[in-house]
Image (cartoon, helix red, strand yellow):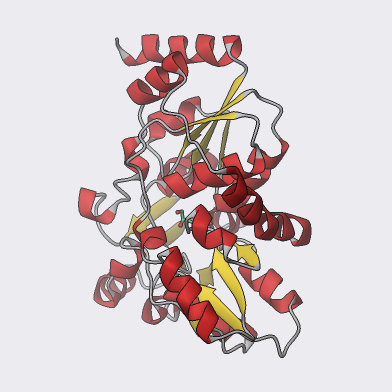
Length: 306
Ligand code: 13P
């Protein structure tokens, strides 16, 4: 089937089956084009919480689909490719976090949304890169906190809020590999161009950035600005929406979009597997009900507070 036919078939199936397609900004342009809603982690969680569709097709990575299922136990949550995991989420095994938590009984566990349902079930509160600073600032100043699993985001929150959260030693394989020398070279080539960066990048890069924020916050910052050129330090999937919203502006990325610098898991979603997933109503994400109920508590807390 060619792309146009696939799109038509997807549209027909989505209407017939009362399905919604949610996609993250890091997915392929063809996926973002056909999605009902494209967002960052926070917006996607909110959308998943409010949808009245019967089927949620989640074009993102596994933990995002899990979040949708946790919020929608009676709905079918379809994942085009079940192998689309998250290296960052995999950095934190629930058993290890449980052991660490047991060693620190007076600490609250704050987890970044990029974690498994089992880790969420051990957490007191979930945050995303879009609401982390706000939510941490709402906690009592003397609250002792373990932050998992992203050490870069955790370090950024500590610096911005003056907290001393204990940081889990995990990182996103994409953002953590961006190199200071690549950013410096780009800044030297374009001396007056501001740099925007995602807080999953290492501190040395964030210190060189003019703006740090979630995918949606970066999009807003750039789109609201009169400045015509930006250095963009995050996954290249953001360029599709950036260029759509900002015709005529120029964006410089650290590397030419090459597979080792892109999130391969996000790119596993495509028109073919989305079509097949809608047609077959599979693969469907299943979740143990007891686990779901435990994981729901810190997510609901996040949605209420943010
Ligand atoms: P945001 O969507 O919150 O910007 O985070 C990006 C990310 O890590 C996706 O996995």
